[in-house]
Length: 115
Length: 114
Image 1 (cartoon, chains in turn orange, red):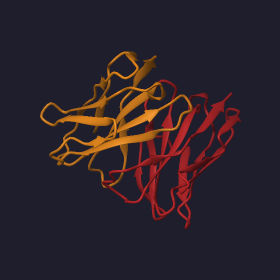
Image 2 (cartoon, rainbow over the protein chains, first blue to last red):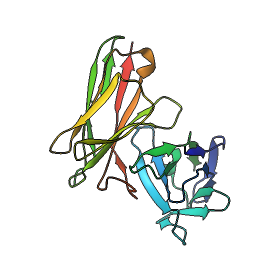
Image 3 (cartoon, chains in turn purple, red):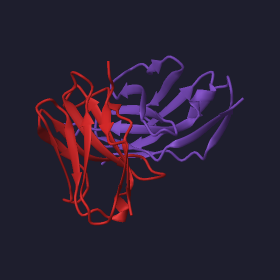
C-alpha cells in the first residue's frame, strides 16, 4: 500500500520568496511516480510536476522543482519567487505499480502568500 | 483544447436518494479515474476506467458504481446516499491505462447530502 505524509502546518510566505513543502512516502514498489498538485479555493486540482522513481535528475517545471531523495523516500516541492496566486492547498501524490493510474494523496499543505 | 469537464458543478440530494455524476476527459485521453475528496482531506481513489473496462477500484462500498462510454466519457453513480457521501467528486483523465506521468483533473462536482 502507498502512504503519503504531509505534516507541515499552514505556511505563510512572503511574496517573491521561495517555499519548500515537505512530502515523505512509503511504498514497497520499485517503480512508482510522484506528483504534486495545487488546489486553489475553487477546488480544481492543478497538475504541477511529476517525478518518476527511476529519474536520475530532479524534475523542474518553471518555478516548481521537486527535490527527490529516494533513499529518504522524500519528494519535497520547492516554489521559487512566490506569487500571490500561489496561495492554495498543495497535495503530494504517488502512483504505485498497480497496473493502473491510481493515485494516493497526502492530506495537503496550506500555503498563504502575503504581499 | 478543452480540459476535463464535469457536470453538474453542484448538487444537493437527500439521504437515500441516488445521484449520477458525469465526466468528459481531455480529447484523446482514454482513461478516466474518479476520486472523492472529503473536506479537509486529500482525494481518495474510487475507480479507474480505460477503454470501457474497469482497471482499478478503491475501498468504497458497492453503492458506488461507474461506467465508461465509447466516447470515453464516464458516469459515477452513487445509490442510497449517506450524509458521509457529501464531498467534492473529482474526475481525472490520462492517455495511458497505467504508469501515467500525467493526470489532469476536472473542476469537480460538489455533492451535499442532507
